[in-house]
Length: 340
Image (cartoon, rainbow, N blue to C red; front, side):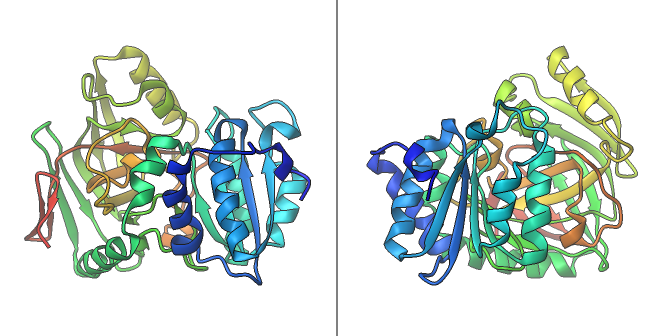
């Protein structure tokens, strides 16, 4: 295990409950399996906590630190990491995002998806998330997510409203699948950790979506909680028709991101967060998108799971606060609280 020696010799014991959840509850690592942990210097302490739990299972593992393979951002995921990943049954990616590295994560998924590797995606994981979202009761979240997804699969439309100005309707199609990523990760679908959401790709959508929580990818690290300067997105026929924001720099960066390719301004994901341990926006997309409520993403629609026929090289999430949600005519959330 040549890379494990680069990890800290000790770590904050407060990280242990979240690490235990990741390895034993969410990924259910078994002694006969092989695991790959991909981390970076910023997440090395969390990786050390994860390794301590892996050791308890007796499973074979290796740890790869991205900075050991050259300066970041990397254009491509290092071949040695992909080769090890291809031989594993379980994996975790625990790294801070850097501009231009989405390609490397997509290359990783090109290995994970066809091999049905149980993968925990911990992008931008930090101590706060380990102490909050990662300490959730993922069995309870799975039960809630299952109840909600069964209702969503029967619905034809979802209506979303907020006091901040969101008034948005997503039209659903039976040909586009709903996916549950509750934190209990199966070979059929990798999942973010902490988990707690259900998602699909909308057949069509229209209206106004006010982002008064966070935006995703590297913009989240830069701008954090944008409640003071919300981003207003007008959507027509599933594409961005207009943008407004008092923060002109954020507005320019978001607009440029959504013009990367022909589908970067297209709503690819429509999701409902279900992690009941997430009670407030913290300024980190990994946890904030699991907050009970709605988030949408422009760009890649996870076509390999939703069945959407188009693709994109980008994917940026947009999270709001305090939603009222209706599935057809049934209200399932009021002011951010589930009614089911």
